[in-house]
Image (cartoon, rainbow, N blue to C red):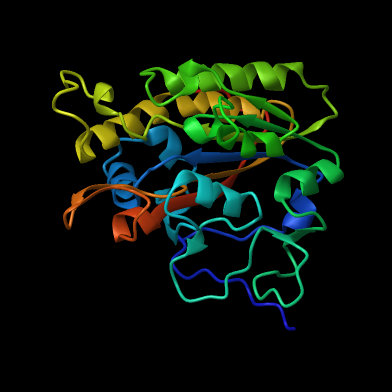
Length: 290
């Protein structure tokens, strides 16, 4: 089967599809899922200059519009960890960065990193990566069998109550743990670091000064949570690129509804849920946090 050409439909100007067969093995890798982040909110904040630390890394300064592989955390991450990142919103097929070897795949291209295991984590482990998960929402908390499935796919996983959805300082705590993980690694060890950011997920009312629990969450408190994440994400980028050049993917796993067409929440089929922001870019070694 003839592999598809690179597709840039819906991609920001300046976006490029890297040759992952060259990136894997030579770079450290960072995957950040901004759990529950809506595309429209992310795009509005980037355009308004409200998330400067993220926006400086976005190709063309804007998020790429993509479709989520699932409508809630568990389903979406199962797909992502099999190599199915959010799909560009335009007509495909779209070449994938990572793919399990699978006969007849129309999205496996010459630059795709192809692995012979059922998931990306074991595929990267097979070529010498240390795979580390820093969990956020409940599907990563390891408190019950279901919450152990996703973190159990990694060689090393971390979760504390301070990383979870109820903590107003969750992302700061996650970044501090990421810094500790990176600092302990031997210099020659390649790293795949995954961070599931819980701050956008409900409850997020406490990220808006003066907000109350009784008033609850809203599109505005969701936006304030993204501003909170932006204020600290420079430290994460600095840690991930502290040892060598790092290839980073930052995206949402799904969105969420705040009364859109009468819907609230996610695990449902609505544009606010299936449309997500996405970006990938390189982080140069030695960068300092802003």
